[in-house]
Amino acid sequence: MILFNLICSNDHEFEGWFQSGTAFDEQRKRKQVACPACDDFKINKAPMAPAVSAKSTQGTPPLDRRDGSKQDMHKALHAIRETVEKNCEDVGNRFAEEARKIHYGEAETRGIYGEATNDEAKDLNEEGVAFARVPWVKRGDA
Image 1 (cartoon, rainbow, N blue to C red):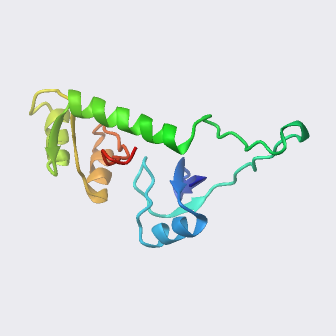
Image 2 (cartoon, helix red, strand yellow; image 1 turned 90 degrees about the vertical axis):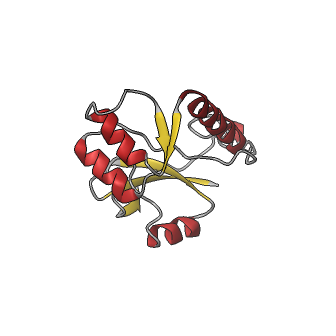
């Protein structure tokens, strides 16, 4: 896995993990990489500082900024999934509809989760509906 700093055409910067540089390029071409702030698909790699180790640490792999491994990341994502599933209502593919109802006071305020298309997410964002996209790891993918 490789971490890229990414930037959209609206100058939003974010990070993305990919199997390889080629995998990033392929996903970008298929419009599978979108800005989490505005759902823009015009994504490029942002300048990154290379990981350079001092002589005293040569032979030691450089640490990620988060000081975590892929396994740590998966554990954290599993913990997020468990917390969301325990404390929020699964509204499935009705997420955008339910989020709007809550936002406009037409439904009780509560935590929800579900699925939304990129277009639905973009519309919610434009309407000012607060939500977050979270990578949803499979239960057996730890």
